Length: 157
Image (cartoon, rainbow, N blue to C red; front, side, top):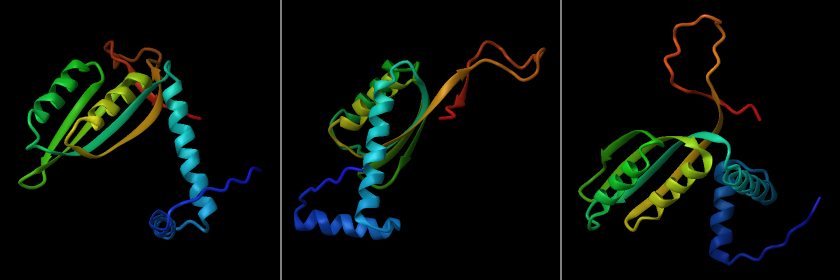
C-alpha cells in the first residue's frame, strides 16, 4: 500500500471534511480512495476507444448567453448518431436544465459530453457513463423481434 501526503488550503480541507461526513466516509483516506478510483475508472473509459457506452449528460445553462442554445442544438445535430433523446426543462427566468441520453463508442460520447459541458454559459455539467457491449443476440433462436437494430448490454466487469 502506498501513502500519499497532499497539502490542502484550509477552505478546501474544510469543504472536503464536510463532504466526507455528508457522504458517510469513515475517514479522509476512504474518501480520497473513492475519488481516485472514480478518476482512474473515468480515465480507463476514455482510453477504451473501442468500447461502447450509454450515457446521461445533464447540465444547467444560462439561456441568455448569446447563441448558446443554438450552439448546443448544433452540437447535438452534428452528433445525431450519438444522441438518443433530449429533455429540456425551464428552471427559472435565466436557467434551463437539459438532459441528453447518448449511446455509441465511448470516446466520441465522452468527447461530445465534454464539448457541451465546456460551452460558455453551461454550468453544473455531469455525465454518467455506463460501458455496454453491443448485443444483437436473442435468447430465442427464431425470434421475430429483431428488426436490424442494435441492442446494448451493460458491461459485466
